[in-house]
Length: 289
Image (cartoon, rainbow, N blue to C red; front, side, top):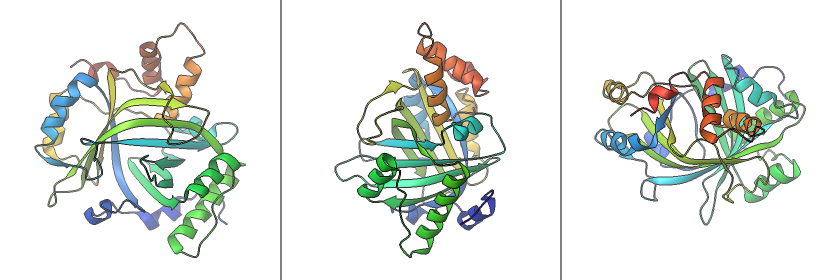
């Protein structure tokens, strides 16, 4: 059992995924830089066309270039994880359980840790029974003798112990389009999330439904890179007036719940308040085009 900060344990997973690993939808552990942007929906078709001149559609995006993402975020009784996240510290960590739906869904549990601009992620696969045990019975998975799996279980135990126990707090669902770099290019992944919804009860992960998380006119763009932005992409973002913002989906669901206690506040006004809370000063600029 580990105690205290777990910074050193993440050095074991400190590289971006290789191309062949992206083709294996099983365990993925890596380090990369992630930049987020809020963009207007009417910009997306033109922006995506430009992206496709330099990138390929993600092989997992089988539904006309899209796929569903369903994610449960865990926190303690005092919501300390999300409170730390929206305060923008140099280091923050999140624990989430994710599935992509489908007839035979796969369940992952993963840590997402951020040190400055670097994002570290590690995940393991869960059986459906293990997913149900964690979410509905607060029973954590057991070790199985596999090094990577058991190391993750140690991290999970440490996280739970440091927080005095954890429970599911938000379920966030959205449709994602994804593009990846061409075979001989540097690592690059671009995703655009739409139709974001959330709920803070009923954690049946692949059951769709919830309240809007952002206005229907907005999309969340994420750019994942190993080092610097490719020059062509930096020019493209500048051309469309898209500027980097701070945005946390889990943080947004927490703030949105609080904002909705004011019945007269529209979703657009609520999102503007959310943007201000996240330090997203460029939100208005990024939605002009």
